[in-house]
Image (cartoon, rainbow, N blue to C red; front, side, top):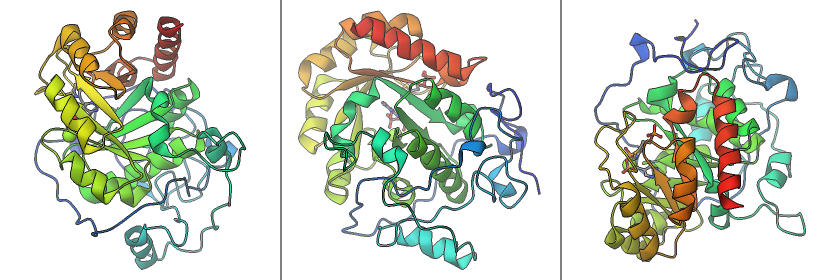
Amino acid sequence: MSGPRSKGSGAAPGPAPVPRETAIRPGGQQRMPVPAGTVIRPGGWWTPMSPEGRGPGGGPSRGPESVGDAPPTGDPRGPLAPQRPDPGSADATAKAHEGAQGLTGLEPPAATTGAEDAAGADADGRAPRAPRRRTGELAVYFVYDVGLVGTGDPAPVLEAVLGAGVRAVQFRAKAVPDGLAYRLARAVRRLTAHHGALLVINDRLDLALAVGADGVHVGQDDLPADVVRRLWPDGLLGVSVRTPAEARAAEAAGADYVGAGALRSTATKDDARVIGLQGLERVAAATRLPVVAIGGITVADLPALRRAGMAGVAVASAIARAPDPGRAAAAFVRAWQRASG
Ligand SMILES: Cc1ncc(COP(=O)(O)OP(=O)(O)O)c(N)n1
Ligand SMILES: Cc1ncsc1CCOP(=O)(O)O
Ligand SMILES: [Mg+2]
């Protein structure tokens, strides 16, 4: 059965509206319990996609329900097919789930992958750099917002954006059923790992652990940052802040970076409070942590944001809603480099 068509599908990787039947509605999500004491080892255990499976517009878009249909990407079972975690990883839940569905027998993970090298191997080239030391890669931080891009195959948009030089992706799925969010996030993990890019999951520590993400981003109304840090000592932890006091608290809680905003109002998050450029400057002055600006950011904002002390920009709609997300992402990467030069 084919899944619903959505943005990023077909030959043109550009955004398309979320189809009616997959529209994201406000409402609470069920959250899986996080096993106490769970600690995830850093590093990607995702099997890279085969080269022939890559490239924007690399096949028809299918919803996650289409797993098992003809392959739109390199995995013979489709882009959202389950991947096998490293035996011994803390992804026991996922493994049990996959086993229960008879989706076993995948190849064991390679000891070292190209993604790991690209992910920032240490100088000796032997070990991938710990996610917490990779905040420099948040310079252009793409927010893969399911409400914007839809629930189809993430490959077309992400291949384009990652191919343009974006090194970090946040998976943001509001009010998406858990199983669907898991399948999408797992596909996003596979793509980001293939490009050696960071994957941060918005709001949900459980989902971050389940898909082997590099980190999690929490806001002031989410799981408290110090609790996340206690449960996941090695995870890259981002915290949303609007004020100097919140920035200092995030630092004390063990955050690796803060997301500050909104720079301006944005349809992507209609309840975002605007703090403007001055608010961002105040946050940057209050913390030693890297500050990533968010909220309605366009390429034209980058020089001022860089001058205001930002370490990066988190961007959703200006990339995802662009006619050509790859081009838009490349423009952000270039503009950031210019602003930093
Ligand atoms: C990089 C970054 N900064 C801020 C946010 C916003 O987080 P939050 O306030 O928890 O709001 P939601 O995104 O969860 O609606 C973010 N996601 N990323
Ligand atoms: C998640 C979030 N937090 C504050 S504004 C915002 C949305 C960012 O999306 P966009 O780049 O489309 O304004
Ligand atoms: Mg949040």
